[in-house]
Image 1 (tube, rainbow, N blue to C red):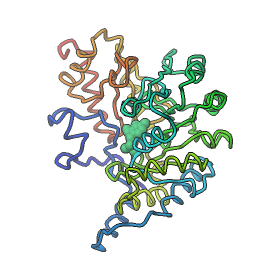
Image 2: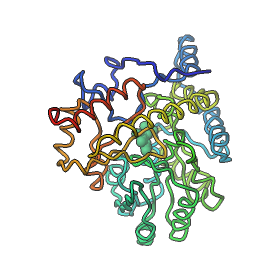
Image 3: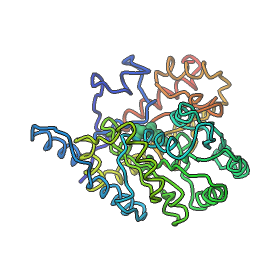
Length: 390
Ligand SMILES: Cc1ncc(COP(=O)(O)O)c(C=O)c1O
């Protein structure tokens, strides 16, 4: 099956967060939110239509098929042999991480986060009364690297209990190597720190980089972590609110389950479960083609930013997010955002939202049809290189 990623589908008037919020003006192209503008795979749409045609949408069972489908995806795509019994439904990755924070730490405990970071992580830490322990990634010659010394110091703090690993990393696009993951995993094990591994972006990784499921590194690592996946990004179904967490260690699994039961967040949805299962069982072809399409988008962006001296595209190793280093523009963050939104008419996400080390940067979701990306790059080029546009 071949998917047409070039197809432009208007999303205005569909209550799309990306189009209705932040930059609702019709002439600003919204590039801020991390959902794609691609149609979902045809088998997913067909399965949902067929189910709807039945005409009754009563309470569904807690799905064994969901557990098998998540385990199947992890096995076939990443050679991680997870048992379906370790899988639990969660309405979203962030909800699952927050349940895990509540289950596996106490108020006042420290949670390590590599920054710049996806904002809901720090919000979840703070809203749950835990303490954010930052481990800034270090930008060296255009590539973000882990500061292992600071990571170890963060783990050694007696109150540190958890590490939220974002792998691949949003917003920097880093795909961590096996060695990096094992080294972080060892430091966590030595210091009794549990790893919460958000792998929502794992399907979009550009060769020669390869995604390693943290838990697949070996038993001692898998027993010390919880993995979170969601087909929402890859297959553009985030509106269906259906994700999975995988916890091999029964004690962690039961503690998280108790937390989920406290707020009765156990109710799966008819369509969410069906979409997750169909995507993970039958849509590997779509993920493969999307990676190839995104590699094409990346090549185009690389070329455009090479011709804009004041903006450096941080080469993403994975994700459909482009993290732009705009510090050479010399603009304040406010002026930078104005230049993007008011001059270029491109609705990027403010880098400052990702923490203090995001100042001078913006993030752009590049999972759009090629023709849209061309228009976006053209607008940015004019706004940042032509004096009469500035
Ligand atoms: C790293 C990361 N984790 C989690 C999410 C959100 O996932 P969910 O909608 O399943 O909570 C996003 C969405 O942008 C993300 O980028």
